[in-house]
Amino acid sequence: MTALADFLFGPFAEFAFMRRALVACCALALGSAPIGVVLMLRRMSLFGEAMSHAILPGAAVGFLIAGFSLPAISIGGVIAGLVVALLAGAATRATDQREDASFAAFYLIALALGVTLISTRGSAVDVMQILFGSVLAVDDPALLLLGCVASLTLLAFAVIYRPLLADGFDPEFLRSVQPGSGTLYHFIFLGLVVINLVAAFQALGSLMAVGLMMLPALAARYWCRSLVSGMLVAVLIAMLSAYSGLLLSYHADLPSGPSVVLLGGAAYLLSLAFGQHGLVMLWHRGRHLEA
Image (cartoon, rainbow, N blue to C red; front, side, top):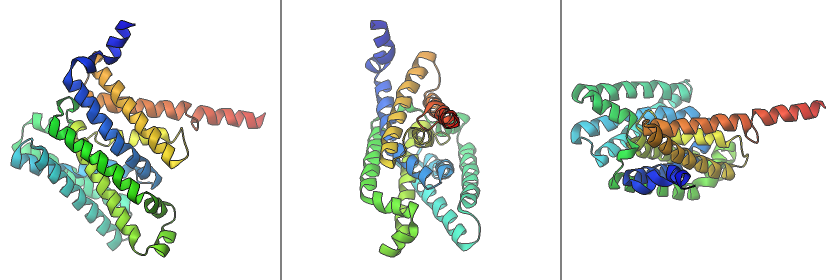
């Protein structure tokens, strides 16, 4: 029993950096997982992936100016993400190109620009640090940023929840009762996506910042149909993925960020197979109807 307790809780009791990593991931889960559920609801699942790469050139400029300075990298990332979102939105409205195609074009340009900027003046280690992050190196300012972003996200959701859903399900109805407000809520939501990705970027890196945003949300879809319960289950799955991923990283000597995202992926695959609305239950219901 003692050995099991040491295995499950020993790393967090013994090492402060493990506790910081767990708190950082839980803060990310509180902010990012509900956003992932809304992105999935609005059929924008790939938007988070695109934006996680779009913030890279701004973070690169911040890094080149001030080194590994949290405020500089965060401000640069937010500016770059908002610029890409606005340019992609403007291109979509000015032409007949679909919104996902516009985002794909602009995020690829941003990703290439960011990697080029870092590689011209930074080392390969710097590039790897920014691309993959280091959740075990989270310090007090980064924890404060993650806590503020999670709190701001939950507060904003409490304020815009109903009109945001109305804009997703029935934009014509929202336009009839609040003319012109749909675009405002849409851009507020995009801003929340960007600041959560910038916060996650500090811990997981730009390549996997979207991991705790989308995988728990996709997994929760196979357990619940209600939006609120889906958000709660997504947060729970994200926290469990973070806890088990950090344990896996510690005991198996694996990189921490990818371990957390891999466990989130495992939760998705298990939910896909054995969830209340997963493949096994669909097969069982099909056989029951045939009988």
